[in-house]
Length: 515
Picture 1 (cartoon, helix red, strand yellow):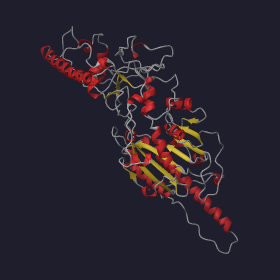
Picture 2 (cartoon, helix red, strand yellow; picture 1 turned 180 degrees about the horizontal axis):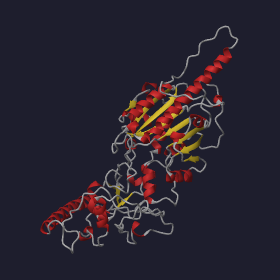
Picture 3 (cartoon, rainbow, N blue to C red; picture 1 turned 30 degrees about the vertical axis):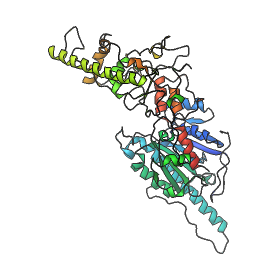
Picture 4 (cartoon, one colour; picture 1 turned 180 degrees about the vertical axis):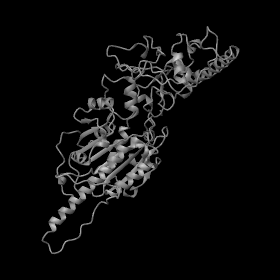
């Protein structure tokens, strides 16, 4: 339960007990995945502050956790004294994953987006030095006048490359966090940032354990492979579930489910039916069906799932914008024999696609490759596109009923989106490249486009739609009480959930970390 408990009290530094009310700070907070996980542990806690630079994420966070101070500043600019003044017992961090993601350049610590996390690690080291010096000073004062006194054994090391400023005047009330939990993508554990973190935490007196996790291995019909790092001060109380034999190791994914669940018995695999609103959500949240243009152009990249599925692909911030790598889409056709329907639809799709491309090549050859004046699309083969049109997803959900093409009609038949793609960020001047000129020319063509010539896509009867943001949040372990402000658009919600973490996995790991 969350509480409004006051600042963490000053305590003896020789291994203080965890306060009755845990004080936490959430960095790179997004929509509050760690906060949601901490709430599920049942421990008394208070989140002192949440830090994120994304204004839409902050709006969602403030909407769901109104008692938390949300800070939009770059955490890399927060000074150690300011961070220490929060007197937090627990830091929860989900730093940017782009420096380590397989889709990025994998620049690791050379990526500017990794800098703020490195500075937070430096701040922890500085606060630990301050705390150690304070302990030394206290021991010297207690030993004053005594004939014999034992020499003070420093609990932390001061790295040569660490600049330690003078401690603030109230250093006796300031201490680094006793516990840390960090989340990132697979690959982070093999990065130089991870090596830097290891060195800083060891020198600051922490022990750590890392876990390769995936909710799919826990029975959740959703794959989201992530690495979590748990760290605690050596003198901090340990959870009964903390296995010291795992200190300073990365636990492979195959071993993690038994550790998190406390049993070697395999979990029962759930189906998506428990996470979907059937057949179409009726709570006012817009339902976005895959546009017919996108069915023709990118069907090979979509991952189809249905209520009977026991798996779905990881959502990313590209969900709704890209067919491949963004996440799965839901098949609303649940009539008996849907497997045969889907197989036959794909067969017919591939057949028509091959015929169309062959005809386009012949038309291009007969017209010299440029088409005639009356047929702007002659010679244009259907591109194997990964990018999809976004229709009305960049408009806030309407409160007074369904929004035009986003929902099913009265008979339940899917209404495809308008293939026109409005700008998501307003009108911007584009570089005058050949590619942009081609896109501009294509946008100026008459409404009779290539997908209209092909007729209804064979995949249309499957009723493929995107997950709603509520369903995505549910698959991420958020409670049904979690809400999005009306000001956020569908596409923004997709991106925010795609950037979040799995709250139930966080809850299980916090149970291992905290006493």
